[in-house]
Length: 476
Image (cartoon, rainbow, N blue to C red; front, side):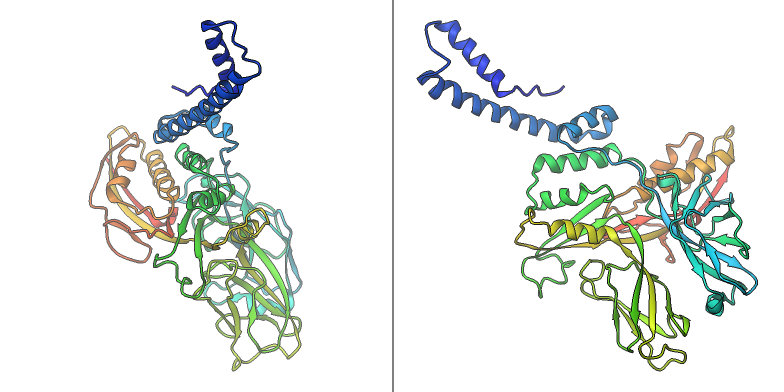
């Protein structure tokens, strides 16, 4: 049932009709009746209609998962809030060659690469490189990986098709769709991330509720809505005075931190000069654990992290646009650039955090609090599970379905949502063809840890799982 909110003119018409039904001689177009009765009563009645509708909408949204997409879209769009569409995943691949290059290798922007079907991959995904990369033969030795026996060059990629399906596990992107001279193969050493399906009813309703509760950016609700209005933001957490997460509170009066789930990984090539002193990155926050992909001097060539330089992390402002992470030289190393030599530093930073901070600094957002947007922390988890299928089930198809359901369940959760075994059991058990899930799980823990209990996700963290982190044992 919807609340029919009448316009003020409709209310005025109703009042005039009601008055004239009692006495047709009363003047309602001007004079004391209009000024003292009709105008103030119509204003009050209109405000009451709006308040009733606001309460109704808030209560109605508690059951958003039961609403149709069309119903929720109509409500959201009436408040000028549109449902967020899907986003493409991003990552990087290494182009490999077994022979030392004798000439420069160019990988053009738009070079297509795809996943290669393996036992633990779900679906087939296509990606393209997002910038042109040139690897100079003169620096080839710096790219040699003795453990693999290949010269390896890293290039950023983006999924062609938006959606969570583009979040591919490490080691699954192995096919080069367009031949490049001297390049033998391609491989992604880390998973692609950031792919999101169209906003669910629950996610969409959360943003609509915030709009109904208020838009003042000086309040927690208004500030959270400000962040969630950006199509790249999936969830946001407001951290205020007294919270242990607000580690800068002692130094900054009126500090408020906003942790954001969402990312736009962007590559920057920063020119600089070697002086032997620390170098600050011109764009923050840089994305750990491996933000710097290459540092090269105009003469000395490519330098090596851990040998020639280290990245020193900002303990207080890390994850924000105000962070001051540093590239620190190992002054005792052999093969450093000459003083005054030109440098190029290639690194990855989160443009989303920077954009949000810049948008909040606009003149119309005059807020007294010192607000800082921060990147939330991803927690990779692993799962080993035994599942018994019904006798008529197609095990290959069932495995794909179970894996997809697990990935969707974990990777669409918001900030601070722990992974509870009973919830995961319900997700798996609801898949047609599943007869029984063996509990406790063989493993349900953070990546690299042991255990089968609830994986606790702190309120500024979010859970993530990839195909390669799922071990699934199916039996009939």
